[in-house]
Image 1 (cartoon, rainbow, N blue to C red):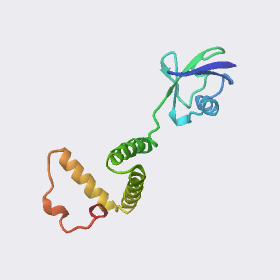
Image 2 (image 1 turned 45 degrees about the horizontal axis):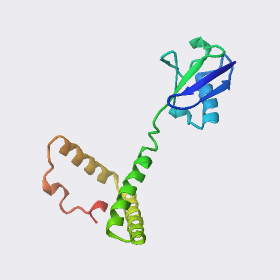
Image 3 (image 1 turned 30 degrees about the vertical axis):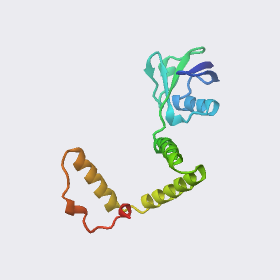
Image 4 (image 1 turned 60 degrees about the horizontal axis):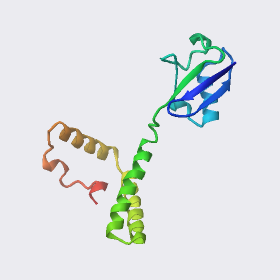
Length: 156
């Protein structure tokens, strides 16, 4: 049977599926046609979110019906999405103070240093950072001696 999939604020496509096809298999077809990963898809029919384990016939979806597709934000790429914004802003700032080529060199060195420092964080370092953050967010400040004399990668 032929059903339509309409993307919220986007296009629409028609797909050929069996009435007994699972919602997950529908998402697989949509992923192939629209290049939207399955884990970012939320299919809705008549206001009801469709569960991956159910089938089209479980929801009484028949030939010619339209499913609505909501594209969910990719949480695994969240850090990657925020990084370019940060680096773009840093690049603009650096270009105000350096020539474009020097700004690019400084930015590249910054990226290398940050990446290296993050790669060398131990679990103890992460725990100390988390504790410090949680304590400060609860308006509790750790004593200044708690970090005295320790050489963490972030201090260099």
